[in-house]
Amino acid sequence: QVQLVESGGGLVKPGGSLRLSCAASGFTFSDYYMSWIRQAPGKGLEWVSYISSSGSTIYYADSVKGRFTISRDNAKNSLYLQMNSLRAEDTAVYYCARMTGYGDFSYWGQGTLVTVSS
Amino acid sequence: SYVLTQPPSVSVAPGQTARITCGGNNIGSKSVHWYQQKPGQAPVLVVYDDSDRPSGIPERFSGSNSGNTATLTISRVEAGDEADYYCQVWDSSSDHPGVFGGGTQLTVL
Image (cartoon, rainbow over all chains, first blue to last red; front, side):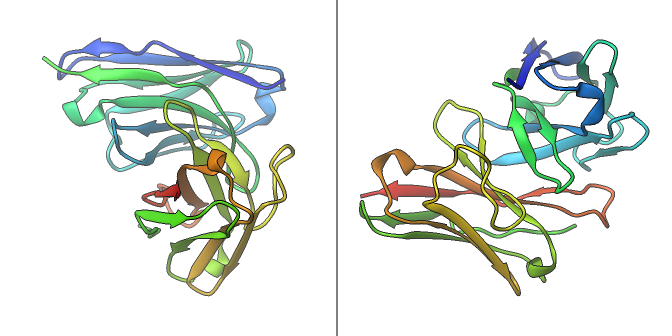
C-alpha cells in the first residue's frame, strides 16, 4: 500500500534552517509528481511547493519562494524540503503528498511539525 | 493568483443532505478536488476531478462543478462525517498553481 512518512520537523529559532524528508513506499516513486503542503495551528491547508516526477519542473508558493528548496532522489524514493531563513509564520504541520495528473493530492503522509520560535 | 471561497461552517442534521460550496472565477473550467480532514489527522481525498470518488469513499459523497461554483454534496449525513472540508484546484496557468479554499467546518447536529 502507498505510504508516505515525513521526518525532520522540530523546534528551530527564527532565521534558522531545517530539512524535511518524506520516505515513499508502496508505489513507483519516480512516476509521480509530489508536493509539500502545510497547515498552521488552527488554520487551513496551504500548498507550499511542487516537483515533477523527474525533478525538472518546480513551483513554490510566494510565501516561501527564495527561502525553501524542494528536491527529490528517485533512487532513494525520497522527497525533501530544505527550509532556510525560517520565520514564526512558517510554524505548521508539513505534509508531503502524491499527486495525479488531475492535480489532486491523492495520498498524504501523517505530517511533521515545524515550530519556529525563540 | 486564483482564489477559492468556502463558507466557514455548515450545519446539518443526521440523515439530511449537506452541501458545501466552493466559489471561484469560472471554476467550472477547472478540475476541482475535495478533502475531508478530521481533528489530528491528515486530509483524505473524497472527490477528485469535480465528481469522481477514490476507491473506498462512500457513494454518499458526490461533487458537481459549473459556472463560478463547485459543490460537494454529502447525502444521508452521519455523525462520522463531521470534519473540515477543503476544495482545491491546480491552476496550471500560474507559477504557484496549488490553491486551496479556506475550508468549511461541517457540524452534524
